[in-house]
Image 1 (tube, helix red, strand yellow):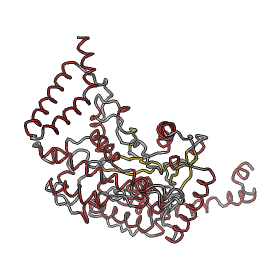
Image 2 (cartoon, one colour):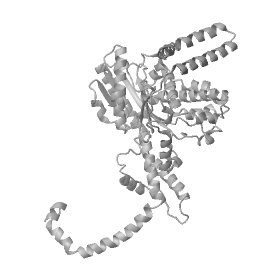
Image 3 (cartoon, helix red, strand yellow):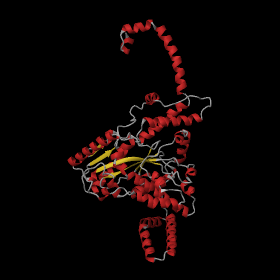
Image 4 (cartoon, one colour):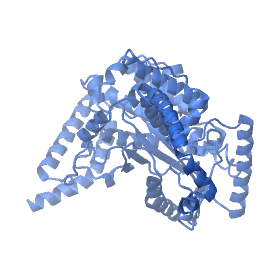
Length: 498
């Protein structure tokens, strides 16, 4: 009675099973011996390893919101299997075709039922985007949202220490520590062109390059997790501790009500409940499969940022080589702190015109209110006029049509099969080498300040000797002395306490 009640079966059914228990047991044993042989053969070795790597790859694509299709997953699975089979025992002869049936079983094994594979027709995506555009327009008009109150943010992955693959130093640079390092950046702003402070996620909590550096003084909001990915918890952190304070202060400075409309895509790291975390902030989500069509930050702002980042790193490399360093020496000494500073500078160079322009595909309101809406973001000119020139100064074989444009492309770089197979111990070792315990904050001393002032004076004398235009030199000298006034105050205070 107890067994029947727990299993939801009738008592007569249980009695029948118990009477035939020997026959049932023999049949199960015979079936199990056959099935276990098949399963062991199918799941052991390269196939099992391949699925583990494939899971990591799919998670990477989902995190970066890269659309997945069955054909993409099947091709990646075959590629991983072939690579692993090359290094397997020569006696291993198992074949793998990545069939549709295998894919269905793979999804069940690894609980990928919620992963969107494939996509709706392009025409359906366009219709969905247009419908959202109409709903958004009605909301903006009804609620009287100002352009300063409408925001959008989006994540992008940046391999901060990777040179163009076309360059002769690319292969050598792969041996430089940090070559495979990436950060995730959350970038965004409003319709009026205001840009939010970048939110940066790295895998290390306390990189060695941050020795004696307060993370609160960085030009980005610095966070970390093991994979340097955006998570729901980190997004909540950004929303509550970064976005709300900055948006509130911006509204105060512009003398407008603190009433915000935040537009997000439906990424895994964007929890749906954030919309209810503040009464003055309304959060709406873009429909699935419309991100590339109407997501504002994907319409040129991120591409412009990456172009500026590339130009900034090339410019620093030129300066280093002109001072006697080799390009490899420069790249080896380029730390995550340098990357953070360069990211902030590159984001600062993204123009208001660019930030205006990115909204034209999703807004019907305010489209003609800014001159920037009438022009596309000026990434093309940046590539041809600056990045290409700097690349040639470094004697890199870079061409505009393919190489540089590929680097500044809005598409997120994909982790290769080789990177997926990098041993976990190696990744842990690299992280351990970079992590350091927080140390005491930096301290001013009168002696070091005096040495710094002397170095600056020496540099200015060198400029004076080279410049035949004294007015230009004098103007620069005045600006530098004015900028140093805050440090001279500290120097005077330190002298008095000596």
